[in-house]
Length: 288
Ligand code: GLU
Image 1: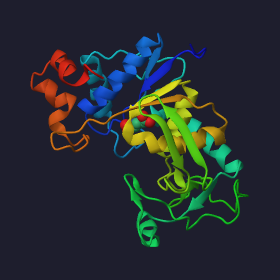
Image 2 (image 1 turned 90 degrees about the vertical axis):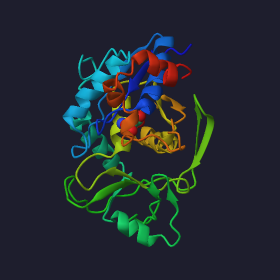
Image 3 (image 1 turned 60 degrees about the horizontal axis):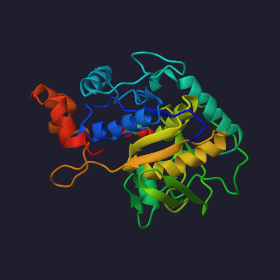
């Protein structure tokens, strides 16, 4: 038995209604927290002020309760590591960013998405977009001594994390077993602070999981590669990394992965159609 108390989390982004795919992954997270006699945290990943909506955040809590989810810390019930909404945690992200900047892990980049695509002769596009070709990367090795830096809120600048090219990142995933990714090949320098003056997903999630003392991150398999990036961030920030448990993604009848646009499989729609929590458990959650 590990001596670290188990702390798990559900971290939905309120950019649409949750669907049965989220529910399935979250159910696994809840089961694992219960099994370990631990705590489950609900965090609203609402950092994207343009896409996140208050109404979706409210619906998320209602729909999760309806389906039988229970958490011990969250936006609705508070807890010792709040606030539990990313939109209220900016100070944490700025502090981490400044730490990375001071240690020379990040550099400013003016490339747009189009620039990145154009710079790649044979675009090596991953599921998440092209691998950054290093156009704005300063010469030399890392950590880099920082050139004159634009202010944090300068417009049109992304700040990228310089990855250690060729380093093999390995971890044993609770769901998928041993994983291996190569920095600079499987993923390139990734955005830490966005040109619209928001922390990136990678930064905010690492900062929050560390600050909230999450001991195991349970989430969808689409984030396996992000885990490799996040391990680099844990190391650069001096945080102990949690364990990871990724879950297979739910697909629709045509084999396409569920997204928030699959309205017919959103918890909200199913609920309005009179589908009961019991039948959803039987159909989607029972073997998770
Ligand atoms: N909030 C993210 C999402 O909804 C997931 C965060 C995570 O599990 O790391 O996709």
